[in-house]
Length: 270
Image 1 (cartoon, rainbow, N blue to C red):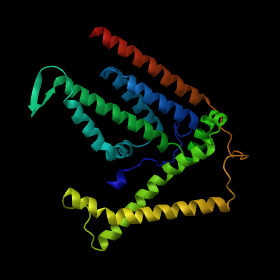
Image 2: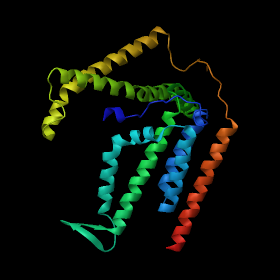
Image 3: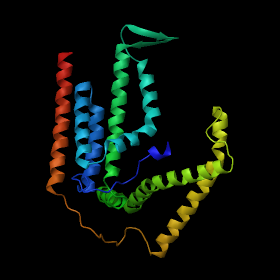
Image 4: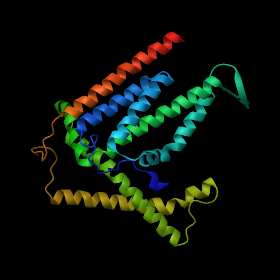
């Protein structure tokens, strides 16, 4: 299960998505998420599915990797879909105790689950194709106006990037601790819910200790390299927007307009 978590991982490549400016990727990802929540019918949602699918194809990230990254939140998607089953209107086609399932409820469940799936995939695609260093630099540049209200933008961006960077490291550490405890005869992942929760204690305690040790080592390494934050620091790479970035912006903006049109057309037909 832990091997399926790919959040925060970067997959090297030379695709057009990899070569895009990180600032534009962050802005476009945020725009896609906003447009997703503006979708009101399956026509507009299907269009967003095609748009995100095109981005995946352009990134040359394998579909297996993308699906693998969604699997860890499959429980959340399934739970959300099940809850929405019982909130539909119309004639019940199935009644479970006091809850009724309608065609409208089934439609809402599928729509909600699909929206979450596309949202997670579009967000993950940004980290798959952008290095942590580029993400830090991009977030710092985008949040630069916050300096005028005395917010340390560089430190904020650094914290967010370090958190993303250490997700794969903590997953790997958890797997090592789990294997070590199992080799010592620990019964992990079996029995009832209470027993399973108790069996996590031999994993969580070493994991917390290891996390604090890594944080201390990272802080010490940064101090040894005379790290003092963003004040007075220069950039190794000077980033500029290219034609591909503006082209991607036009595609997403056009997609937002089409979603709006599809919403209006569907409302008019209904």
